Image (cartoon, rainbow, N blue to C red):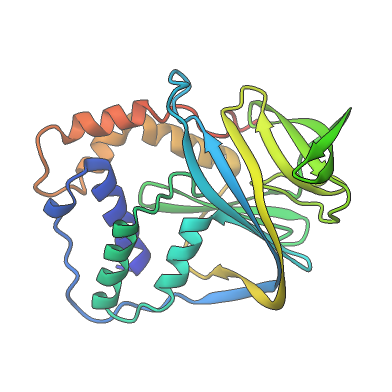
Length: 288
């Protein structure tokens, strides 16, 4: 079983069932296989965003936050959860199950969350957006046209964090989105799948403000890094089929997860069901 399967299973069970000390996972055996990475582009600029989102549409008091990172290259960009990025970098150094166990313990001790974890590659392949995401134990990959948005400039402008920004509006995934972009920052990019405007998007939010992305820092790198993609196996699908898989998992999560739980408290199914009810507000409400 590959190390990412162990990694995902451990964290889902430990965090969902909240019974870390009672989950039985065999970490003995031969060394884990190394995951191969393919370099897509040079990494030139690193942008950190903070995401605030409301996972339960009926509970406006429960707002979660996640750190996100946008890596901009010469032709390709990568957007993902910063904690997931840190985990993937740590896993690169794993050569044994003892190392793997150490990485798990360090990550749990640091309490780094990955509650919003799609990985979005823009202009890979050329003219496309490629998204990597998971539904429980399954990894998926699907493509869309690059920047499938019809932006409309609203004529609004203001100063934000020292930048002159302009406002644009679009519809995507069943939500109406407002973007504030800075023409003086010449990157036609932004958080999540968004981009295609004449300047970097510094703030992005839907009109109900269930999902709000704000730029925290922008750092041109003195020494270029690398934008990489892992060669791990994923199920190739379409955006619509992925959306359907997510929906079906939310509806039947208890039965699906129970197959992987060992020696868990009797109230675990109730905990899972309660958690899933509180996750009824995905960033994409529709796949149209």
